Length: 570
Image 1 (spheres, rainbow, N blue to C red):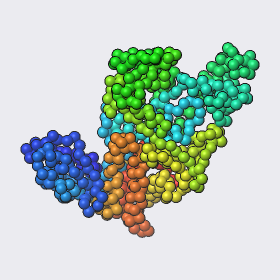
Image 2: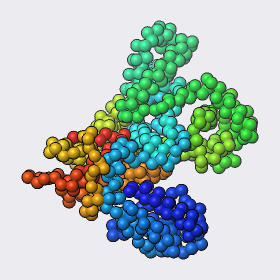
Image 3: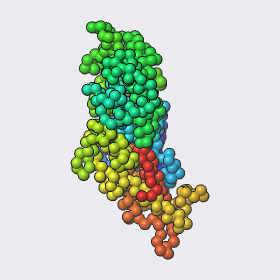
Image 4: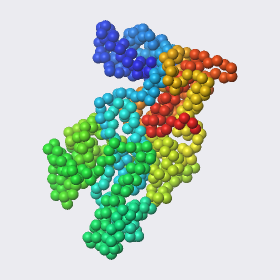
């Protein structure tokens, strides 16, 4: 019996008590079931009686005793104790607790899914860096966290749409085009342009794709104010330079295991008239006004520190206007909740985005999540790594992956809460020792895989055998304290997934896996799984082998949620 199944059993006990007239309360949809910190308090505990007592107008212990009596009659429950002010401490029957291993092996890859948010469509936008340079180290963190969060959302029952917002309109594109053009001329980049060897690489590709550029450059006389030819050359450099840079960003993120459902172009919003449509809708809502020759949105009505311009005095739309149009576009595509994952330098966007949501008539608390992540620094042996050979003045995702590989990079970027700064020691996260968290978790999976291969070599039945009968294993034999600990830990995955989705905290998956790996190693050290020498396999051999297989399944499922591989051998 998993924690979720026990919670359902408790809800059924409440429902029966209400139907019988013993309690007068609204039957809850779900109740809290937790593993107690002290094993002597049972396998699970629930504060349900304390939660219902006020509405029932009864003392908590009285409600707890009433529910305990009903739960003791359940086949899978061995003992229920009422503790303290009214907690239910529950100990499961051996077969019911061991049944967790059977359930996990039977469910396979689907185990851990927690359909707590079925029918909710969430849009998750992350990275969305300007297409004017390689993927930076900071963006690498948002890539790892954002992709893991999308997987966690899906496992929790959300319908998830992921996307990258391509800022391919505006001043930064013109500056990038000017930087590419300067590189073609062998000139230094403009003062407000982009530096690094990658600019020269992009320039060479632009020229290779546009041989006529040489004639435009010659006609403009090599000057930055070379008239019509200069403007044509600049337009080509900006257009093709951004396309080439975006192609590189796509390839980099794909190689990192990050794929998007949609790459949304800001320019497409301009071309489709979406900015004008957004202003018209906001005007209809009564939040648009004109002053000083500009068009404004009255965002201060909804907590912003100042009103925001939509159209500047020169008639050009602002970036804020595009942000408003993009918000409207997402909602019109049917997403119930919009989740933005932004860097530390975007903290000011929280108030603006909430104001946009409210101005469109939405409830920001219901329709919007703005998650702010902190920066990442690299060190090696305690010495800061400060510069990329290719990018020049910043570190890139390529730098990190080249140093430690995709798995170590992804796991290390996602295992810490994203609202805390992160310093990664390249030597530490590449080390194949138990003090390296990603190695520790992956090694546990590989160790179990080796155990199962050895079991098959001995002729023992495993789940890889099509004829394997998972129901024929006597899981009631799994009563050793280390076996009970491991079963309890395995049963927690659905709750951890639901919590990680609700709190937007995929690092909880990583910390759970590390604890699970430690619990497995303690089980393996205390409980012999395979027979040795001339020993014959027994019923406990099959039960422990099933428990090991269940652990391998949970480790693999958890690593998959983080986008990290689960190796069979290490």
